[in-house]
Length: 190
Ligand code: ADP
Ligand code: 5GP
Image 1 (tube, rainbow, N blue to C red):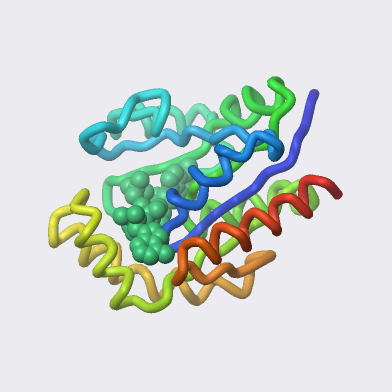
Image 2 (image 1 turned 45 degrees about the horizontal axis):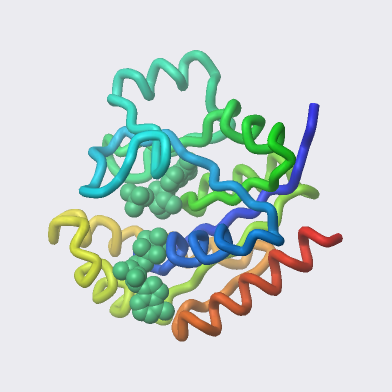
């Protein structure tokens, strides 16, 4: 069975991990492919099934948990389940590529625990919780309630930062991009 490496970017919602993952995916020399997670939330406008997420109903998601189809899964917010299907990682390794994940801190640390030597787990830190809220408001993808729910979870998530292999503060985006690029390049070459 072919096995490549795993790059995890985890952070509180709004920290900028999706932005950084997209940046890394454009660097062809890194040979990365995005792990498409399964999710039980509604698609946002513009999100595509099979590209951004595999959007499942709550029932479908729970059936897959029972069938042991997930490498890891989490109820990240109430009734919003997210998880990595075992088949997804193998699909990418079979193509000879490394896997990059945009997942929550618990899932990210689970991946690191399952594949300790093959995984680089990066924590993306926001400059502050206030800035996180500003970014989520500006992104305009969640209601006020949902933004508050995400921000409320941020302090517990921030406390997990020391368990990651590296912490990158995303204040100046260009600086954060350069830092993650350097970390991933070094890990993939070794
Ligand atoms: P996450 O995936 O962690 O929820 P996103 O990548 O969607 O975060 O970023 C949240 C919002 O903040 C987006 O609208 C994004 O364009 C913006 N953003 C990302 N990085 C920065 C930064 N360094 N400074 C200001 N805004 C940023
Ligand atoms: P969003 O709804 O903003 O797309 O994602 C909400 C949170 O769920 C983010 O922190 C995102 O990284 C996380 N997430 C996405 N996919 C997965 C996954 O497969 N597993 C886990 N544990 N979290 C995920």
